[in-house]
Length: 434
Ligand code: URA
Image (cartoon, rainbow, N blue to C red; front, side, top):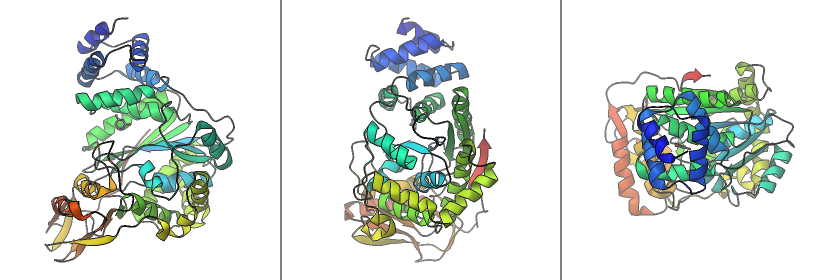
């Protein structure tokens, strides 16, 4: 097989065979196909797309470029969730312990925040001592003892994705649905789970701004998962306002713990219940989603999910006292109020802009190398649909370094649209794709 022939075939809209795809992904991962040829192939895929069979072969080749985990020592069925990300999306923190409290097992490999979106690993690391880098041996021990682990991607998991993602970033080929879908699924399927629930976000704070793009991505992800023998379900949910009221790493841990105590915001609790119900059905624990939802809700009320979270924090080196006394988590020095200069309804929030306001305070990173400050972030007091008067606080900024405060404030000014039209109530859940 010659790489140039594959580039030409794809450029001209032809389908690539399984062997050709396996060859090019393997050879690229080993460094035997140069970046310039892979860039050309990625751009051809960007314009021509991939047929379902090609996409399955492409994802399988990426998955098998590294270690595929399996859990023979765990008696329960392993399931997981992946969200395409957004602002204030801390669902993994209450969700994984709740599913485990109900009888499932969750070996979750998560990512870090980039740009306006947050990442589960950064949030967990705001807990003093918490380690997201465990050896394979430690990971297995925690899974065996607890049925739940939350770790970062290792060098062994889907190395083809690591190389391809960096190349896509540099060649403007990130925004391709087949390339996004194969990237996500190669990492998630490497966890060796039997069932996967996807939360595909749409709206002003999401990767997929329009409902149509979100539908296409959801259908593609579900097609890959089911095509490769992992039962996969997706929910398309709104990311047109921040999830919950707290944005920022330690702040989101605080809100996650509130949710685990049954005292979380309505949207965070509802998402935890709905996604958790799907996971319990996939794990064979719940008879149907209604039963699953009731079980997850009970685990948040009776303290059993919180207990799993506390034990997971301890098992991964974190201070379990911070779960019961959240004043032990990092807190920012100053709180600065951002108030409304207009009276009216919050008609819309540009959620990506709001996320960027948190990022410039230090809660997120503009490039993968940036350091973050676990303590800083935003407390969102007014969200879409709320009535506000002149001088009402919209957001409280939790600040350590005041140098970017003006910048953050300007981003918030641009993020809030306040007008005279009361927006209609909208449902967080748009549709289920299976
Ligand atoms: N997340 C991923 O893991 N990969 C992509 O390509 C885009 C988002």
